[in-house]
Each structure stands twice: as C-alpha cells, then as structure tokens.
Image 1 (cartoon, rainbow, N blue to C red):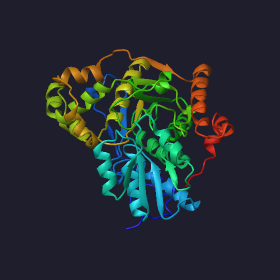
Image 2 (cartoon, rainbow, N blue to C red):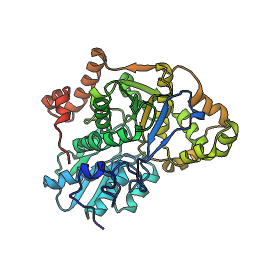
Image 3 (cartoon, helix red, strand yellow):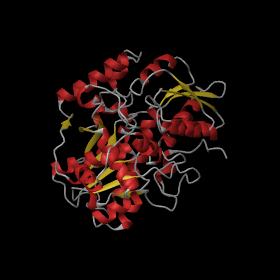
Image 4 (cartoon, one colour):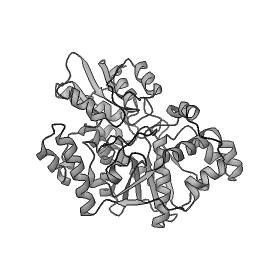
Length: 407
C-alpha cells in the first residue's frame, strides 16, 4: 500500500484524519497518545505529560518529518534515478527507510560508525542500504559536507519542512494534550537537543502559551548549547555536538544537561523493575505499567530535567509540563545488558533522579549575550559548510521561521 502523497498537515490535525498511516499524535483508538508520568515518582506537584510516538509506523515522529521532507523533494524534482540519499542518525534511519519503502524509492542511508545495530537492522528491514562514513555521532556535518552537492541528498538536520511539521501538527496535539489537565495551559515544554526540527513545536507552543518556557536538554558529556563543547555519549536522539541548521535559537529559553549514567540507570529501573517500583513506592500498577516500554533515553533525560526545573520554579498542581518523546525503550535493551551499571538500588536510583530536590544548574539563554553566543556558534559552523551567511542572518528573525515551506 502506497502512502498518499496528497496528505497534508491539516489531515493530521483533525482527529480521525490521516488514519491510514498515523503520522500525527493521535492514538489509534482516538484522542491524544500521551501518558501522565506517575506523581509518586516525581518531586513536583506539576503534571508531566509525555506525548508518545509508539503509534507511528516505526514508533518515531521522524516518520512524519521524513515523509513531508521527501514529498517536498518530489514536488521540487530533487529525486533522481528513483533514489534518495539521507544523512540520518538513530530513529531517523528506519523512518526514512520506511517512507522510501512505501513511496517505492531506493533509500541509501549515510550514518556514523557508532550506530546501534538496532537502528541498522530496523532500517535494513525496510530495504535501506546502509553506508558508514567513518565518523562518530558528533560529526554529522562531515557526512553533509561529502554529499551536499547531490540533488537527491537530504539531511535530517537540514530539512526546513521537518520544522514546519512540528510547528503546525505537533503544536495542535500539544494543545490537545493539556486540555482537561490543570490550568489547560503549557507552563513548560521540554525537548531533547536533536535534529533541530523540534524547535518548530517549541516556537509555536510559546506563541500559543506566551507565558510558557521551553527547555532544551542535552547530555552533560556533550554540552554544546550549554557551553560550546562536545563529546561522546550513549544517549541516542540527542547531543550531536553542533547546532543543527534548522534549530530555531529564538525558541529556546533554558538549557540543562543530564548525566548519561543517571539516565540509563533510571530507564533500566522502569523497564526491568516495575514490580519493585510498585511495592517500594506504594504505587498503583495502573500508573506504573503504562510507562513501561513507552519511554526512551532522551525522554527520561527530559523528564529528569523538567522535574528539576519545576522544583526551581515552584510549579504547582495546576501547572502542566509537556515532554515530547522521540522513541521508546525498545532500542536500548541491549545497552542495559552491555553497559556495566553496578548493583542498582531501585529506590535510591529513582529518588535521586526524580524525587530529590537537588539543584542542577540551568542556563537561561534568552539574554542578549547568550543569544549572540548561540547565533555566532551556529553561523560560524554552517558558513564553513557552504551555507549563505545572509541566510543564517535571516534566521535571527522570527519572520524567517514563519515563512518556511510546508503542507
């Protein structure tokens, strides 16, 4: 069955629209596909609402952004020999592979040497050819540099259409997600430092809820937004060591970094010790069981950061925090086995991550000095990649982001 190339954003905003392939945030039975993170595991009274992607064809919202990106390439006759070459990492790999399979396109994915076998196999199962470029997960732009002159080449980090999908579709589902919760508003919106397209949702959520704040979360070992540094880490879906071309710097208010090992241990506890959590935290299984298999590492990072910021902002039970999940726990089961975590004390691990009132430093990037630092880092980086300096200067203005191509 081929994917309907006429599908539009409006089809995915309307409940019941686009049902054939589930490229919006609606669960198959109707309503918003979300969970409320159990309050017995949080150190805040605020409601932490997580939008889940497990209903997308490959369990990632990258399915939708990949589809509309390739639709744009087809409309602009950028696909030659019925072949697409893609720079894609982690969950974006099977997403592009799946879209190509339903659009009858050959898919060549160019990725880094450290890619998990899980993502490789998922992409190959959809018929993609995988080519490794001899780079690590913080060197995506080396892949872009080597292939950017090809008309049929696209990068998940450079697709402006991916930005408009989140600006339009995800925004509406975030709004639906908070209806009937607390004050029916978003107070804090949290997302991982990843492809940059998620800032489309961040910017539009802020336009809908002007008093809300947006929080970008990245690994402490790769604090690019926090202090211009980069490094290797184990958290898929975030922290690539540079500011993506399609990252709207104007959309980010705060930056927080979270430790790799804490994230991995916390998710391992949720996945493998749910019964222990129920007994030790006197929790209802109806609140704990629904989060098992639903949350990936980057989502756990965002939840930990959100709780900590909520404590610092003294958020109450009327306040709503929305976290955007990019994948589920399934890709990380092998990581739990291969990474030595020592003896895990479930209660102390989760108390330290979620319940303690410890202070994690947070960086406010709304002031002129921090904005200029991020603008300069992004500009310097992409000018070296051949991007027009004038275009990068235009990205400093809200009007640029409001007039991008979309469907």
